[in-house]
Image (cartoon, rainbow, N blue to C red):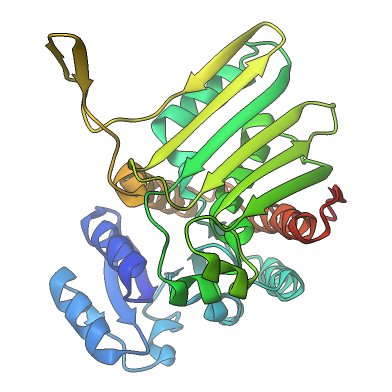
Amino acid sequence: MLRFALLGAGFIGSVHAANLASHPGVEFSRIYDIDRSRAQALAETHGASAAADLDEVFDPENIDAVFIASSTDTHARHLVRAADAGLAVLCEKPIDLDLDRAREAAAHAAGRAVPVMIDFNRRFDRDYAELKRTIDAGEIGDVELLQLTTRGPALPPLSYIATSGGQMRDQTVHFFDLARWLTGLDPVEVFAAGSALSDPRLAEYDDVDTSAVTLRLPTGALVQIDSVRRTGYGYDERIEVMGSAGLVEAGRRRTGAVSRYRAGQVVDDGLHPGWFERVQPTYAAALAHFVAAVESGTPLTPSLDDGLKAQAIAEAATRSLHTGKSERIEY
C-alpha cells in the first residue's frame, strides 16, 4: 500500500482526502495545512493524522507519495521538496502560475526521476475516454475540427479570481490539455477573444468571464473552445470532434434521463448545478490511475510535460486576449 500525505485541507483537499481514504491501495497517513485546525478536522474525518510541520510530510521513512492540493503559490516548492525526498507526486494544476518557475520545478523533479502526475482529471471522464478511443481507432478519419465547451454556473468569488491567474490559466487550461490529449498534437497558434459580462469588476483583475479561443494544429485542423463562468442554467460541458470520415460527440450530461410529456411540452431533467457535480467521479479515477502506475512502475499521464504544455498554451492565449492578435505557442 502507498503511504500518502495530503498537502491542503481546503475544498479540493477535502475531495482528495475522501478518495484517498476510500482507495484500497492507499494508507492515508498525514494531512498538512497552514490552518492546523482545518487539517485536524479533515484528518479526524478520514482516519489520518494532522502533520505538525512539513518535515512529517516529506519523510521518506514514513511516506511514499504526496498529493499537492495546497494553494497554487506553494505547488512548485512542494514539488521540489518531494522530489528531493524521493517521493512520488500527484499535483493539482498548475505547477506554478509563472511558466518559467513551473519549468524550473518540473526540470528539478525530472532530474530526480521521481514519478509525477499532474491532475488533469478530465482525461479520466468515461465519455472523453471513449472519444479518445474512437479517434485513435481511426473511426472518424483524420481530425479536422474540435469544438469544446466549458460553461460554469456562477462566477467564483472575486477573491478567488484575484489569485487564479485568469480564465485561460484556470478554467480553459483543462480543455487545452484535452485538445492535446484527444488529438495527440501540440497546437502551434492561438487566437483568443474575451469579455467581462457578468461583473465589470473582473476588468480590475485583467480577467474575463466569457471567451472564445481558436487553436491551429500542425495539420491545419482547428480547435474551438468557448468558456463561460456564469450561465444561469447549470454546468454545461461537452466536446464534439469532426473527422474526415465522421463525427464523435460527448454531449451535455444531465442529472437524469427522465422526460415528462404534458400537453404541448416535454420537460427533461436538467444539468448539474455546478462543475464539481459533473466531474466528481474523475478525481477518484485519476487517483486510481496514479496508484496503479506507481505500483507497477508504468509511465504516469498526464505527465509534467503535459502540464507544462497546457500551461504554455494558456500563456499564449492570455497574451492573445491582450494583444488582439494570433500568438505563436512557445513550448
